[in-house]
Length: 384
Image 1 (cartoon, rainbow, N blue to C red):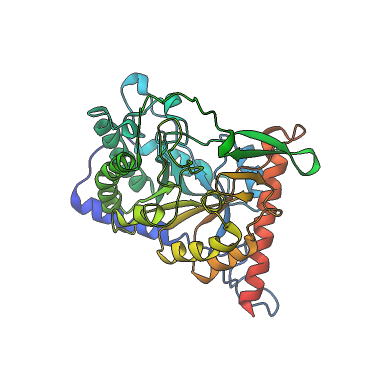
Image 2: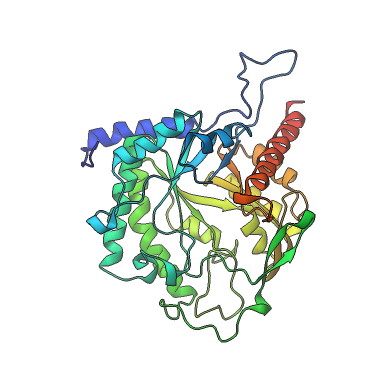
């Protein structure tokens, strides 16, 4: 199907269809429906499910997900052919991605935009939005409008994106459990003479201006088409004075941070791809602070996807570890999400590396199983 504009009546009909797809996100954990439940066990009560954002281009890759109990996916339609002058997906391309997933037993809950990734701005092939460079950024925003429409036509209810200039900063590696390798970030180890990026100096006010410019032009279209927009927080926070001339702002929860971001446009289609690991990295006392923040964010009903990973440490000094050994109690996080009615993906993320684990398949299998076990354990207490 080629790209074409649709009239308002068709738009309203599509909005209802997209909302129905979003509503379908409230599936039950596991595979048993109430009609299939056996014995005296009551129907399952959790609405969230184990998902993944790993790339997959073959049936074998999707089977890797499903045999580990993962049946919901954040997918990747083909990159638009920029060399041919098209910077957006066609509806048919999003449909093909959805059909590929469904034919292999996987539900496509969300897609990742082919721009606004977590890359460093100096390596970003489409930097105009984050550089505040018009008219190029307006053309890119128009391309995002077309991709939102494509998602609505194809029946995909959400997309994810980043508002990043520095990418994901890390300063080293440390040895971890079983010979694995943990990524580390210590603000004190950042090079003091690092040059400015091509963005120049971007203080907090300038960063908020760029974010607001984007939100005010994109979220009304997402709302109109009933397609949810999920932004990942900035990973990690920058130290006082920033780094390479940049001050990250989506790396604190309170004040001028995540809650301010949600306030920029009061729409149920404007929300977060909340990374619990990144949230922990924002805090000086994550063991104490994180649970109340997760609950308050969940109560907004504007978390559209969860990345569940763990750290040891605090803001400006942490390492990413296996999910079952970090400072954050993931069982408590799952319980909070369950109590607040969270009904979308929970994905493993940033797993530790090991030289014997090519492609991190073992690490992700551990993550899927750990999440599935946590959900079932929490669910068993809710059922009583």
